[in-house]
Length: 204
Image (cartoon, rainbow, N blue to C red; front, side, top):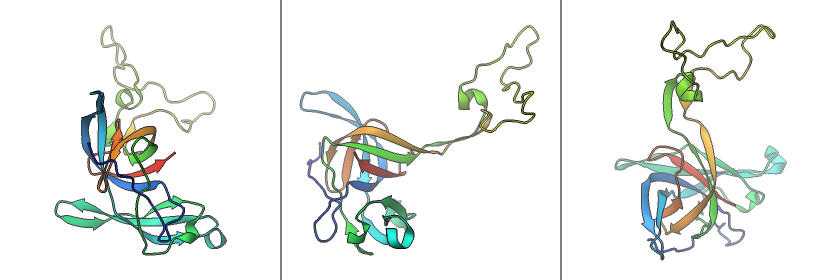
């Protein structure tokens, strides 16, 4: 287990801690609690974050800060795409300010990530359709069947069909922080995305 040290996402003046962070998914493993219970956890590396821009209600119509971080790729560090968090006290931050994390073991968090891409998939894999008969002259085994209608005389919007599967933004709520230290956070359960994926983590 890790140290359980409490970290805080604080402005430079030490006020108004913000409970959000950027992380990089490492892998899944298991740990044991004090009672010997086996807990499946996802290991997430805490990414150092810097304020790259500030949005205010007066100028931009809403209050938010944009955060820039870096991602390890082999022995190199590459810049990540800027990520925006909407907060009420954006004016208390400064561009170039380094942020820390305010999360502690036992807290519930919501984790947002991009799911694994599955490529082009048919309706059976993508939407759990059933197969058609394979005998007695059946010629509709894995086809989706009729996609039209008498009225309206077109394919309606949202019709379940074959297409690109996965690679969508998913938010998983009510995950528990099992342990945390200066570099790593252990979160119970599975988290969307491949190993190395960038995650947005919020506290409730």
